[in-house]
Image 1 (cartoon, rainbow, N blue to C red):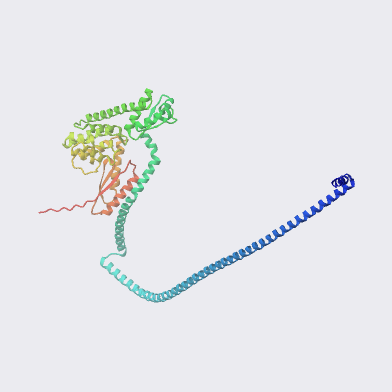
Image 2 (image 1 turned 90 degrees about the vertical axis):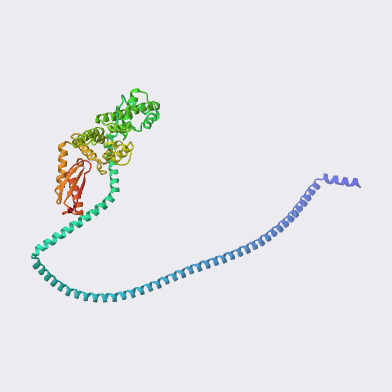
Length: 533
């Protein structure tokens, strides 16, 4: 059986028609199977798509519900917010209306009050106007009566006095003029005192401004010394590397060194004449030596300073020996020597002091006083000028305090402190020193003024002062720096004396030319003399 099947199968296979049929059957079977598979897959896919669609639809319904709910909430919030804003705006408008209403009510009250006030004032003005009309009528009547009374009194006064109307008018004008002059003098005196108080600060500022603007040319002549150098190459050696030498020189000597484009010259600048001279000596020796460095600068400056101190002492000793004054403290002699570097109106102060010493001796001898004491006072009278640039105050006060430290006699202290009338004179030697000081200062050639001009200036001062009514005498003193005017006490009162002093000073300023300032002193003295018996 088995063999038969196998044979049959072999025959089937070997048959070409059978193979074709089998192939077709197999293809059809595969196609059917593929359709069935695809159909199954399509059903599954469609089912899944429907499921997804349903899920998406449900989700869309949920999202739409949420969005609708959210939109409703937001709309309700917007409505609530809008309603609140509108209520606030309405409240603001209501407040403004209330404020406006209050202002209007207040203004109405004010207008009512003003209206009441105006009504009251109007009634008051009407009453005043009626009263004024009545008073005007009464005044007209009284004025006519007063004119008649004045005419009657005038006629009676003219009959009593025996004067004419023009004479009486002239007398009245003179009286009014005298009273006006007195009031004007009093007013001028008060105004001058006030102006002095106010002008002190202004004058200080003006002087400072003038000094800053003008004093450069003047001070440059008296505060600088020029040092000649052999060549301009020396300027670089004086300056030194990075300015080392010039800084050391200025620090040691206390002066300013000016090195500019001027050929062959450098300038040493300082207000102190002694320090300026020592600096010049130091610079000249450094240039001559050629070795310029900080250590050498200190060494040469020390030597020059000692030499200057020795020269100052020698100058003081020479002046003391020349004036023949003995028993002076060495410190005083050294201070006197410093006066050789001080000038006053172009006159050397040490030479001036020696001249005053000799003049004081001559005057004292003529008066029968001690010439030695007068010489001592005259030599020391200007010693304060050696220190007035270092201390505050005038040179008489500075000199007197300086000499008091060395137990100088009282007549010397009074002469030094009072030779410009700063303190009262207690000894006869003080006016002697004042006279000798004026003579030495006014000596022809001493202060660049001739004797003729000096005498004429004194005469002009006295002539101007005596030209005013009420002036008895006038004296030009203090070498023309002061004018003392003596007035008649019966013709001039205190206010008139102030007017005379002001007018004399004004006329001197307008008509004369003089250095410095001139003080005008008006003296009014009433003496009552009675004899007891």
